[in-house]
Image: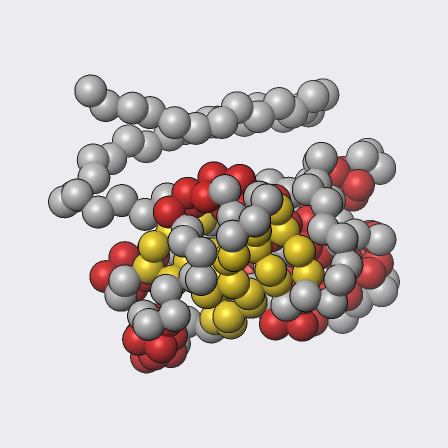
Length: 219
């Protein structure tokens, strides 16, 4: 029996045609890493940085509006986020699969915060995150400041969250480094009620909607 999962999105008042597609593949071998595979004691690794897709979409959609506030080189760099750092996480996922990781999850809508919450709930663990270790690109920070957005809740496609045991984390980090993939260890998983907690004591609420809606709502 094959199981197919996914999610449905709703886009009201769309002024132009949209093409939707999907892909189906088969699992090679027996090893499947999911968001629910996280184990107590695992270190949580974030590749690249956060809000990569959100940054690119804002720069592209609001280019004329932002042209008088930001340099052309700044906007060009932000628009190219779709390609560099990029949205493809295949390389880091392959490394994690064979380096002993227990879990993987690619955060998308709702940003990094929703991605972490989804891992916490799927694994039934408490995640403790050091916000200072989360990479936020300068372009992301500037555009979020301009529109009053929280980068932690902005479209995060391009990043990958990896759960890895303490004994394997050194090997995994070394292989990511050898592949020139930017990463940071942002926290750990512990026994406790499923949820996300910052180590500085700040409360972490799950996002109801993605931050990018605040930008497009102005239309």
